[in-house]
Length: 437
Image (cartoon, rainbow, N blue to C red; front, side):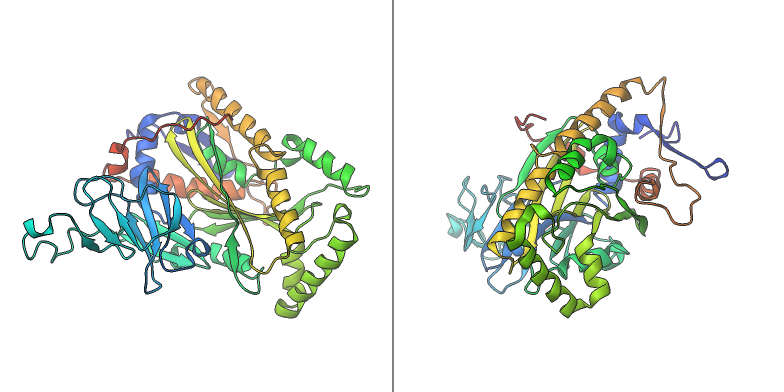
């Protein structure tokens, strides 16, 4: 990437923080992001609840690389590159399931859940010491670790330990894990869609409290009309820079939360259930933390591209760039294991109602991001976007932009540093899904 212009301009004296719009459109910027950011960070790949039993597996694409995550017969978790060491074919072609072994369909090599080569046709034709060095085994991802049930990989063997990388974000992952007495689980099913916009626009959008009242006015009107004459839809809260590019919004809002804020729409049965959930939170964590867990919402960004929304439901989203103006988005719902059928029904309804591809929020956001990307065609004449709101404030509000500046500051540090070209850029891009956005 040529360093012919500054992509982030900060002028503290006048309270100005601007980002060059060419950062959203240039191919060389995207290639630099692959090598200097995505190849150097910890990236979310799965949740431990998806891998409960020995033999459980999920196959995921993480930065254009196909990965296989397994729980082996000893109970250990593993992450491998999902490619046969023999000739390169994809070994596991199912998205998820349970298997004792994985057989490559091309030449029939068989691997265990721990990645070890177990057999291959014509084994007698190979030397006695053929696999003594393990070169016939599945290749593990350089780094793999978990925190609070969330599984991460890194392609950099020298990356800092995961707990250090997560910095202040650990508090919020711990807070989510405390929702449950018996653990949190990913609900079955996954949302998949695409957006014709640069991936960093979704980073901004996911932690942007400023746009809610204007962009999502229809949802706020819906709440007003369905929540028993709700008179106020004010959103109040704060934003925090958590270090290492991570950031969070924490705020109060008028919608219901299965953990554990009741709204009239849920009726008396719901009130009894929510009251019981809240009482258990107080018993386990004390009244102050229980109140925060029940009534405060959190939009958490774990740099560079994991967003966990602890709002009207707990949602986990990743988004990866395929082109400067095209990204793929995956979303999951996370819920307490012990949750009742009633609470799960409303949790999933909330998930789909607001953040689903056909819900109130996501179509609004997709339209906004694609409109921004379209506007960036004029970047030569209108070169900068402004992210200055709240600069200089000692206590930034949820609708200020401190949290975005945290992301962009870390992004600028990494993108400005020299780095080797990424092997990811040479990987063939998968076909675009035929998903309307």
